Length: 71
Image (cartoon, rainbow, N blue to C red):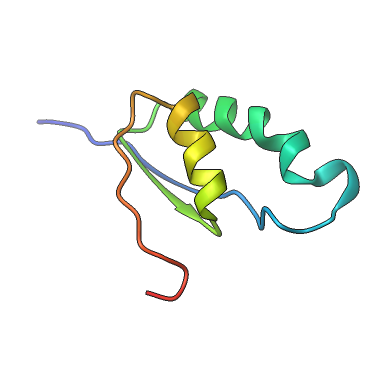
C-alpha cells in the first residue's frame, strides 16, 4: 500500500497591510511551515503570483501547478 500525504494551507492575502502579519514578514515562516508538513501534495489558497514565485524558489522539492483566483 502506498501512502499519500495531502495538506491544504491558506497563505492569506499577500496584498493586505496587516502590520506584523504582512506577507514580507511571514513569507519565510510560511515556506518553512509548508516544508515541515512533509506532504506529497499541498493545496494552497489565496496565492498571488508574487507569493507563488517566492514559494517556488523556497520549496524547490515541489512542482507547482496553479489556477488563477478567477478560474
